[in-house]
Image (tube, rainbow, N blue to C red; front, side):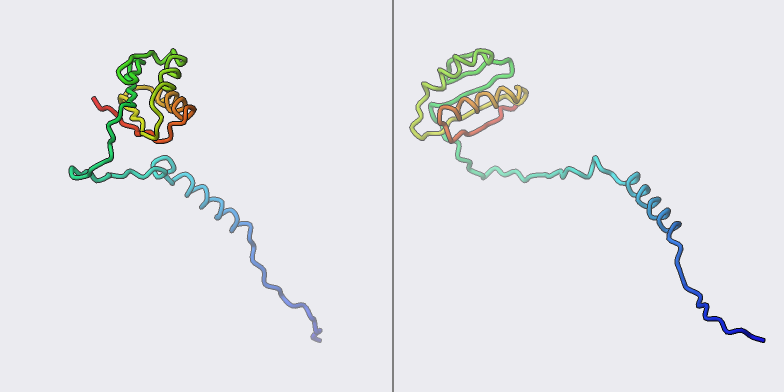
Length: 134
């Protein structure tokens, strides 16, 4: 005699191996990716000889030398004596003309920032920055 049963077989997918494979793929892509080199974009900027830049020759010129000397309108100061530098920048003409800040390429970055802070404190808004190559 045959009994009638209402047992339906349900279809199910076991996802435990699927999770293992996904984690293995994530680990593979993290290990094989190049994080350090791909963060920066190197650009070869074009150079031209016909470009006419607006380099205004004014009497307000500051030159930072790599030995810590600062020339403000041909007067020499030491970078460690910020009070004298502050006083010399205060005496510059601030009639809307620009200040030319030139720094040698191997001078310290903090020296340039210090001079720019003093210029900003005294209201010099237009500063042209140049790098002196050796």
